[in-house]
Length: 155
Image 1 (cartoon, rainbow, N blue to C red):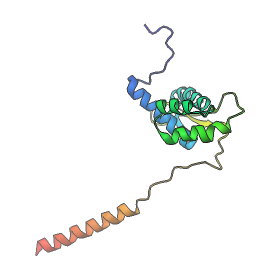
Image 2 (cartoon, one colour; image 1 turned 45 degrees about the vertical axis):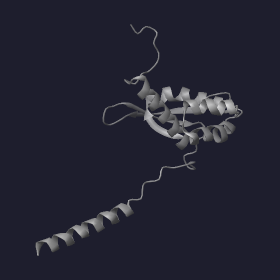
Image 3 (cartoon, helix red, strand yellow; image 1 turned 30 degrees about the vertical axis):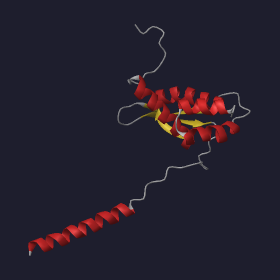
Image 4 (cartoon, rainbow, N blue to C red; image 1 turned 90 degrees about the horizontal axis):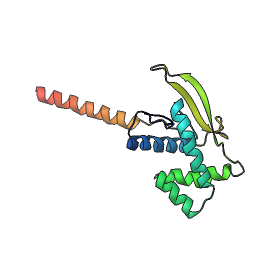
């Protein structure tokens, strides 16, 4: 029986669930605003707020305990050097959840989760689209060589 069980499992075993939460924490710390489903945002909020609170101490023990939970060094560095000083005078409540409505494909409730001092006009780090020009050049040169070989083989 599942009496008094509050934890959201997301239909995953413990290992994949832990990896999902780590990836969500990494993404939120990196971009400071992410779009995800509402249940994931609600669970993510507690993990991120604990990480920022631990990062406020900014000593060796805090850094090592964060590295144990979130092995990405860039994430831990940003938590301890950037986010924690920004929220120094704030006693919690570092994130906000903005509900967006249902997702078109499966009607899952979607939401933005962001830090409370996030400024959409001046994003810290934005996702840059990949440059595919090199790949297109390689594909074009490969096609040209194939056409040349076809011409040679026909003779």
